[in-house]
Image 1 (cartoon, helix red, strand yellow):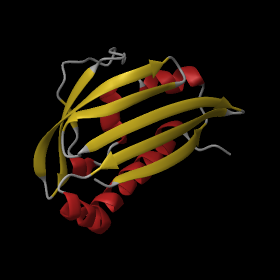
Image 2 (cartoon, one colour):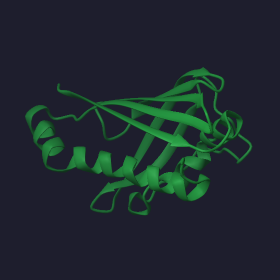
Image 3 (cartoon, rainbow, N blue to C red):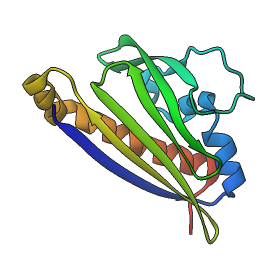
Length: 156
């Protein structure tokens, strides 16, 4: 099984407290996900819910051709105001391991996403990644960058 690795960095002009408050709330993920994904958190959480190690989050998503799928991730690691990791437990990927890192910098924070993923179905999965999945994943993170800039501003 081929594994793909992607890394994205974004500087955001907010405090580490503001960043952590926003990104550690499972419901805020829908705010920074492209609308065509039809991303909905189905877990029974409120806007006050904050993540913790062992937390299970369920979603409905439509990643391709409007086909609805269930997705379940677990928050496996959390270091307050430093990083958290989500891993797929059930969903469209053979592997999904997503690290979210936060670091204070002058004028704001640096947020780094490190993603490792794999597509099932061996050779067919590799072809699918080369044809559309890899581009779709990159587009999701591009959308997030723009959505975060609209919400919090852009570093100067």
